[in-house]
Amino acid sequence: MTVQLNHKVHVLFRREDIDMVRLENKVVIVLDVLFATSTMIAALAHGARAVLPTMDEASAREAATRFTPESCVLSGELYAETIPGFVSPTPLVLIEHGVKDKTLIYSTTNGTVALRNASAAPHVYAGALLNADAVVKHIAREHRNETILIVCSGSMGNPNLEDMFGAGYFVELIGEVMGERMGEGMGEGMGERDFSDASHAALALYRGESPESALLRCRVGQMMQERGLVPEVKYAAQTSVLDVVPKLIGGELRAL
Image (cartoon, rainbow, N blue to C red; front, top):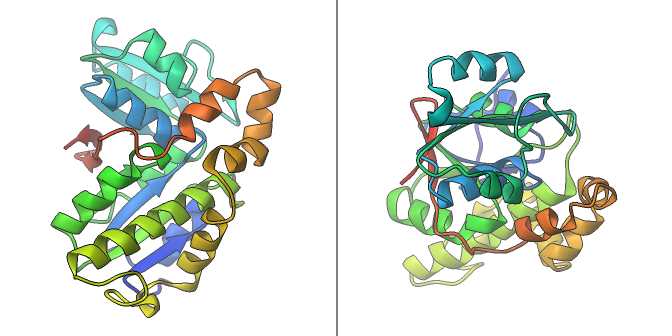
């Protein structure tokens, strides 16, 4: 059974909940802050031709057969472990490896699956703390009267703090940008009633601490610290430093 959303801005805390929502006429923003969407956004910002999000290792390897080895990069993880023979799926490693003018073929446990699951919506964007302002301003220009659904990828059926925190940042910006365009502020223009309870909950979480603090204390962030990947977490904790709007077009993420 699917449900019709009654607010202009709504947040889903797990990718599994996508199946419960009617996606027709929705603008969907998919988040996987540590690290899938952050990595895909960083790759596009550093010159990747496109990103091909895949469901699993097998589909990634099959997709790679359609490219020459020089024209693509295989990257991904399963249950937080890099897939054998693939490049590590974190932003700084991929930037260092080099993605310019290449297609990134990318497989992760949650983020790429969430993007694929959301593909029935007419407009699907990849979002993270890194590019939130650019995505929100694009949506304000192109989709201001449509329902916005922010999807947190979560982790194997559970919500993730970093994704909920990121969703709150998007809610904050949507309130500011949409209100500015309508000549009103948050709580007036769109109206607080246009934001679902889940949106308000995510916003309260975002306003409670700094991005770096939230990402370092969350479960995945602590795991990354144990692996010596604090610089990767701090990179993903930057807010609106990349002017990249990645949209899912024909199964590929491309920068608009």
